[in-house]
Length: 217
Image 1 (cartoon, rainbow, N blue to C red):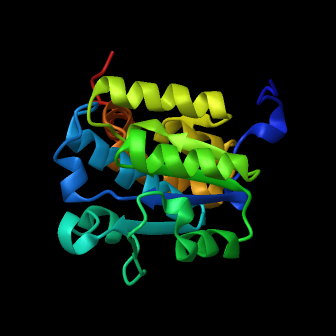
Image 2 (tube, rainbow, N blue to C red):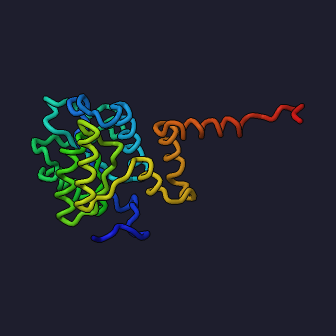
Image 3 (cartoon, helix red, strand yellow):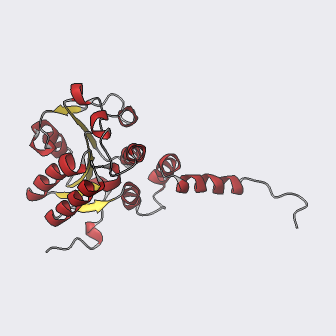
């Protein structure tokens, strides 16, 4: 087994491309591995983080006229961007989508989608076999059951995939808080989508901006 370790194995925004797959109403209706609203929140946080770091994002759906359009919370992050609608269940068999990924010139392929065991597992396993460095964002994905999601993750790890959550990925892209050009935008995403961490940051700012009473002490 080849272990994924060392500094060069960490994800870099300049080498990453994100593919968001089938975040649609039909699929969300039978997500039971996660609380559905959490999947929506995490996916939007991931999308905004990618935009903040200049990571190209490919949006794709499957038979949208029946399964529904991608969640507007996602498409609103990329106004005017085309959503590639497929018939293939396996995104990596859809030439238009794969060509869009290849056109970015990036080598670190990041995938999230619904369902984990179907629309995430198949392209991940195929792309790995073709030599891509593939990371799956597990909490911006979801399966029809906890078992389905977990077994899919095990299957993809066995095939050589890297697993991460969206906030860990954003932190890896940032890497250094001295990178001021992205730190401010990432902080906005954390405030909006990182739950308690965002609230704690706002509280910290409140305290820093609260004058000390004159009679204190």
